[in-house]
Image 1 (tube, one colour):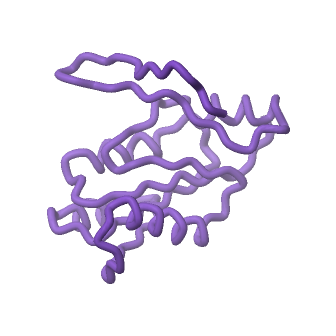
Image 2: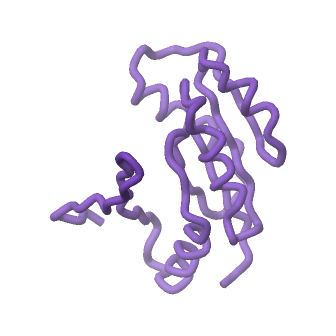
Length: 142
């Protein structure tokens, strides 16, 4: 596996209960050559203070929301972060989700084996009351 720099972008809005675990899951990947960018979309729950105290990340805050639509705000956040990336591959992570420890390594292995693939997505695990279940979808569209 080539040792390319990768970027993990984490977008968040009022995710104080989850954001620390999300960032730690990005920082603790077994693949070491990475940058982690966290974009907070003007949270008012104390997330900003918590995130500022985490080391080894790039942190950006949106203080001027233009849209009242959460999906548009998230797309805007991702686009702004992409302009700041240096990595060959970009991984997206929401502030209330987390990556398993070997996720980046696993995906890079598949990218390197399949040069014609430009986008990959995995199936999420849904966690309810400490019980994990794999999100099942009948049709896969990629």
